[in-house]
Image (cartoon, rainbow, N blue to C red; front, side, top):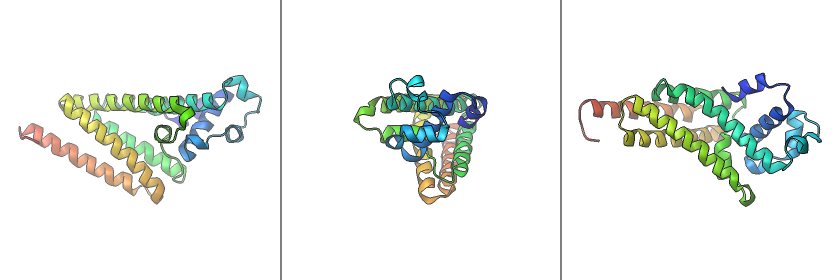
Amino acid sequence: MTLATHVRKKRGDTRTKMLISAAEVMRERGAAGVTIDEVLTRSGAPRGSVYHHFPNGRNQILAEALHYAGDAITADIDDAAGRGAKVLVAQFVEFWERVLADSDFNAGCPVVAAAVGSSEDEVPLAAEAARIFAHWRTALTWAFVADGFPESEAESLAVMSIAALEGAVVLCRSSRSSDPLRKVYEQLEFLVKAREFVRRNGLTG
């Protein structure tokens, strides 16, 4: 289930709208750019709702927004993983193409934003980002295993795929074009096919 789907299903939920708004700001400006005022403006929530729903204030909003956004992406990954790594990677690319286009290349990955943009008093954000990335890596590893790769090779392919695709999203934002994402996907497809060829023919590589 994507973040957009959550928005449609939870439109009347003030707390959920605040989390979605915080995740959107995090995608665009990083964790440091998330302010209570901006969350209230985007969500349309009254100021009193902040400490009603989030008694620990901004840090709680950040932590729960990251968890919410990460779980929304993770749900899509887990759903696609059962259909193999090729389907999962293709769906991941399609997801980011939509996010980038819909945001006019202003929105990136909230998990990356939390992993690299957290201050010292936001250490739990980095830990949550690490948890989410670990889940994605595990899901993709087992998708490659299901496609016939040995576990060690599957794990290497999973790490490389996630790192390459997340890096491509950053390049897409800076160039305001989806071309880097498409080029990275083409190379990932080629690598996977080459690895399959090596495995089928008993070659070393």
